[in-house]
Image 1 (cartoon, rainbow, N blue to C red):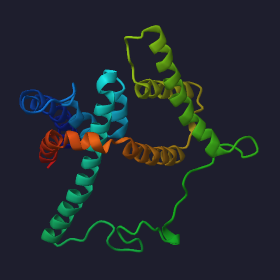
Image 2 (tube, rainbow, N blue to C red; image 1 turned 90 degrees about the horizontal axis):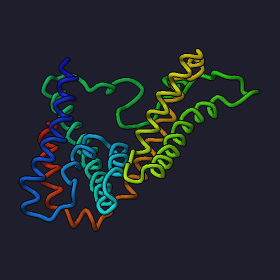
Image 3 (spheres, rainbow, N blue to C red; image 1 turned 120 degrees about the horizontal axis):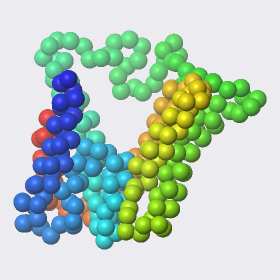
Image 4 (cartoon, one colour; image 1 turned 60 degrees about the horizontal axis):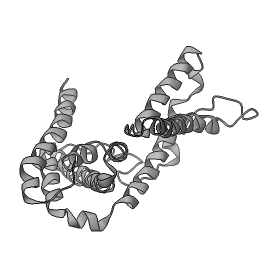
Length: 239
């Protein structure tokens, strides 16, 4: 539908036009690291996970630069989405005379605090605490594919030193295989979607903090001009 078309266009535009602008315009004006054009796609569009995974596949000589610049692009994307998105929503609501979603009722928008009568459980227990804590079980099902992906990446690096497969991608494959195995054995019902979602949210929070800590300010200042042009195009493309 319309949403799928917009997403598909965004992916191709961010990666394709980002590379074209970097190769034919920015590289003619500045000395840029190889793969600079990918920053718009992997950071601004993909986010921290995609940036970290993609950067690990670059040559070690530019890996730190792509990682830092990609995470900077991600931060700009988040801030733009929050500021511009909130502005657009408020303008459209004011123009139509309608109220904002969540503007009425016990939970005021932006408060972040949920009143007691509106609270809901974080998840459902699927195993007896006498055997194992349900939260520990769900956490293990998140950690296991992550560790398997990381170890597989190290193993493949030892076997084929010239080949670099991101641990992120291998962990994703391990997660699919684990999920498939649980489905075949009919044990998938013992995984609670809400609990897994809350764990994923916590991991995302840690990823965001870690991503912000990795950004090199001197590197961002060095490439500030070309990065600003690239991100300005990304913002314009997203509007």
